[in-house]
Length: 106
View 1 (cartoon, rainbow, N blue to C red):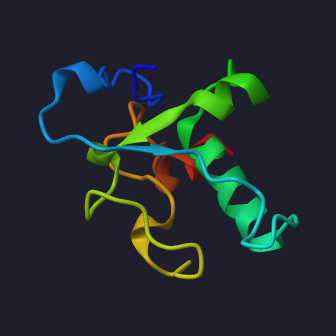
View 2 (view 1 turned 180 degrees about the vertical axis):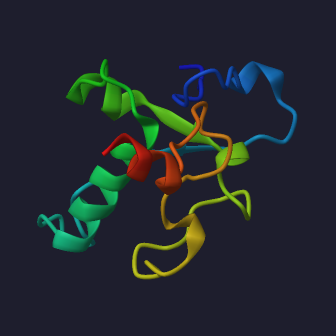
View 3 (view 1 turned 30 degrees about the vertical axis):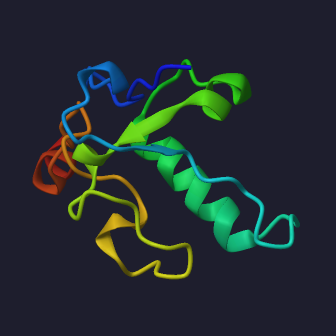
């Protein structure tokens, strides 16, 4: 099955084969196949980072995020939650509203 990046407006796919790697959205299960609170939190943060309303559990199962969205080119390990690559954050296809803008809107 071909891999396509789930990040909005990314367009990377495995057919391009330009050294781009693809990573699954993390599972909520830990090494013992039990729901792990840390893994569950990380999974939710990845889903939130994608900011896609159309993600169903089936789509999440097959969704991939490419290496372009990680500072180091790959996600950090589950236990390294202080690493900036614990969640994809680079070139996410949208811009964040600055806190100064938010305070003006209040």
